[in-house]
Image (cartoon, rainbow, N blue to C red; front, side, top):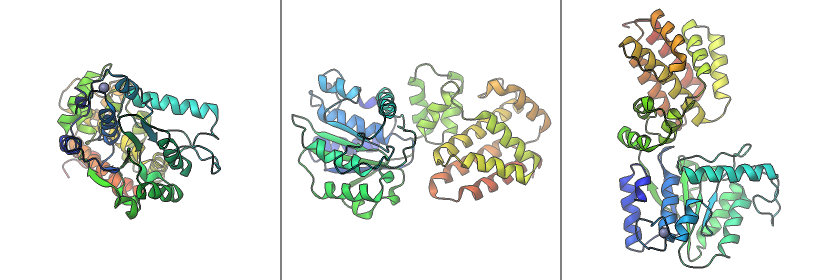
Amino acid sequence: MAWDRIIGQQRIKQLLQRMYSNNRIPHALLFHGPDGVGKEAVALEFARVLNCAAGEWDACGTCPSCRAMAKLQHPHLKLVFALPARGEDQDDSAVDKLSSDEVEEINAQIAEKAANPYHRIVIPKASIIKISSIRDIRREASFRAGSGRTVVVICEADRMNPQAANALLKTLEEPSGDLLLILTTSRRDALLPTILSRCQLLRFDMLSEDDILAGLQRLPDIDRDSIVAAAHLAAGNYRIAMEMVHEGGLLGREEVLEYVRAVVLNNPVRLMQRIQQILDQEDRQTLARFLVSVASWFRDVLALQEGADRLINSDFRDSIEKFAVHYPDARCSEAVSEIENSIALIPKNVHLVTMMIVLSQRLRRCIIEPGA
Ligand SMILES: [Zn+2]
């Protein structure tokens, strides 16, 4: 039952199960692969299994250890993620210099992660994993005792600054008995080769549309009408799919409308302003979600062209209908695949401004050059 909570990733589950059954779990694992495919969710489930009193591959879910793990409040579990830097001294822990509001936000984020292991922890003003967070690992690991295994999950390990990475290297070089480090990253190449060589690497696959659909179907309180479109549009990223089906989850649709207008009007200045506005958020994930929303918009126009009644952006029906009437020959499915190609390029270190300009030109052609 417990592993059922993890969507797809059969190959990874089997690899971990083999390590578990043969009692050959290394000191450090690196989970790498695309965003939103469940790297952290798998790490948390593995930590639960390693500490469950039942000692089975499927955690029982009811023993005291499982109950503490479900809240992510277990003495054998530590989550490391980016935190605001405050010039900590050698002896300060990673949170010592944070304000009470910041600590509250961290606790709220952990609670959300506990409720949904696919949630991405984001703390305002935090972009790096600090050396103090890495020092805390050693400090706390030395206090822990009892049965089970201490698991430290370093989320988005590529966010470690050089000092933190070097401190981690020391921990990797002198592994302590029961400590298991699990690093996750979607940017494997951004990690030091010396770190990579000390971890056992597990590559996660992109989720299939069916995997995502199955996951979405299990969620409570969602817009059932949009799950098929969301599973398709999310391009293998379950987190994006979840955001799409939750109420108001589609990102910045006013922005989408403005962007489509700028594309159609062929006003380069206005278009560049729009693109710059989207990219100013300095987050590739945000851009991906924006493009997913743009794609959902074209899907809706396509749905209207084909006489369908249900729209993903039903609250924007007026604008979408106007567009469909105005551009009856727009090649919307081609537009959607252009957008999907761009979404796939985002993690690949492309120059985003150039990518957006090229995409915008192609979208314009799809809209105003019918049958080209
Ligand atoms: Zn248990």
